[in-house]
Length: 135
Image 1 (cartoon, rainbow, N blue to C red):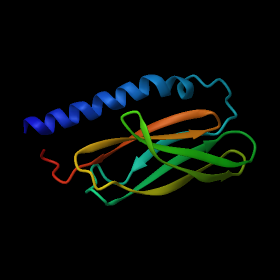
Image 2: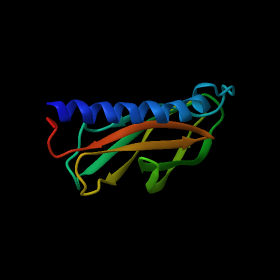
Image 3: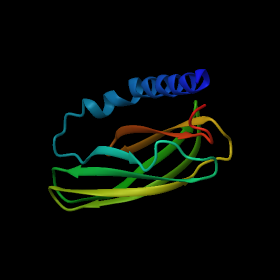
Image 4: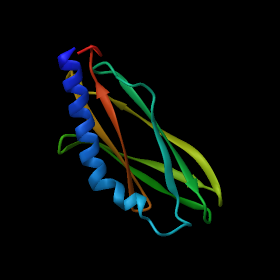
């Protein structure tokens, strides 16, 4: 029980640290016609080592039709371990969901930061990889 609390505390602290650096660029964007990520959904609270994580993100486009891509980075601590791009195409004043899959590493009891950059704004979420959620 003590290790479970410790693991969750470390994951929470990591998420807060990254939010402190990444959130201001998204939260204070002054252009109201720029596409923004409204939410990031991770399909499970915790993944088994080696399991495929499915991540979706909802994009709202209040301006003109747009076509581009979102840059995805997954990091452990300060090390970027995986990157990809997701094509994003939206009609004017539309919203849509986009997704990607990531094969989690075989290493147990680690947390990973998910950073998605769209229109020069960065949004974050996290993925927990643990074989025993009670630990």
